[in-house]
Length: 304
Image 1 (tube, one colour):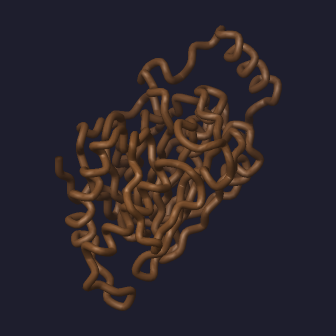
Image 2 (cartoon, helix red, strand yellow):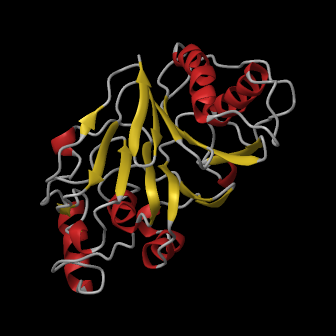
């Protein structure tokens, strides 16, 4: 699927003076913050996409990036990773996403993928720097693994055996290294030539992530390009878009799209976010403690 933004306020049809006026009124409080309807939590923002056919994330990313310093205060960097089979294309930037030239490039250069993870940072641990931007990427069983975290893990300093080590100084990257270390140990009989199934991974991951969650807030998205695993510690929502597709309108930007014009009846896309991206669709709030696996654009397994 390839999504083009439509409606009177698509990027192609926007007038610069309208955007500037909107930003001026917004900054002075004349326009209410888009986060108000959903009581957006004061922490990092997650965005994940899992599909059954390669799809670009332009529409969701358009609204998501506005939360990085424009409609919200998450201005300590951002990043996005697109899977292409076993490898992931990673883009990270310590600048606010709402004004990042790199973010604007992604909005105008659609990259199709079956699994995408994006993150907007509000620093709680670690300085604002490139190495502390999510998502983080490591290799396991001959594949890239991508991880992004929303929350704050207190007093979390697990022993790491050296196979995976943090580059930055965040609790998030430390948790990612520990997850892969424990996952590799739990499934030690598997190799890159004979990797575990996504169900094997789900079963092994569940106790690992639940133990980490005892240290604080641990909302995350994780993918190896075959599936996407998520954990809800406090706030995480998802939606499955499938036939019959409808028109959707963003919360954080006056942009709409008619999905029916850009899809086939067989297409299915699951989108996972910290707070709903649209104001006219029904988003499912995950339960606290819910661990979920998305495959082919829908939740396949979940447990508390």
